[in-house]
Length: 191
Image 1: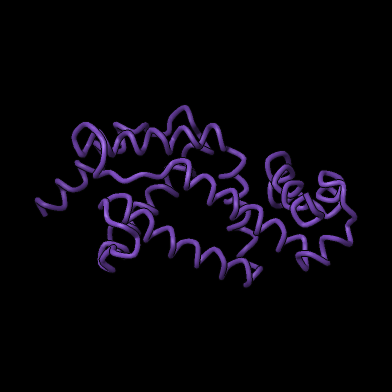
Image 2: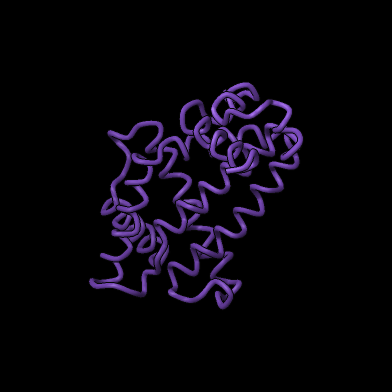
């Protein structure tokens, strides 16, 4: 690998071990066995390097856990619960990724460039989630589904993730999430 790739790999290791906010330039240089100056040369800043490593890890996670709800065996509810089972499993196995993401969101409140990247990522996420839920390719998802279905599912994902990071013993499981949504929909229908 070249210095750029070594730096990305080192930044990822640092994200896994130290998180977004506690990782220093020295940490990345040590983990990648590349000089600290190379970070500025290749990425411009520690933040730019960490952002690229974090977004690459999120993209990898998305490819690993993706799939649409229109395919597969079982009822729509069973497929939705299976999606949540995969999601919740990643809160355990990829905990570092979700903690680093939350740290990046906090840091972004004083870093406009990162805030813009995260906002763009959320827009892509809404579309991707809507595609997953409808079984339609991302390029064909109706804007109403992106704004409604995608936004609501993304909000659920963020909220459930925070519950799992904070209090996993009492966080909802897949069946409870599906039951809660059915109960909420029933209340909205009856209102």
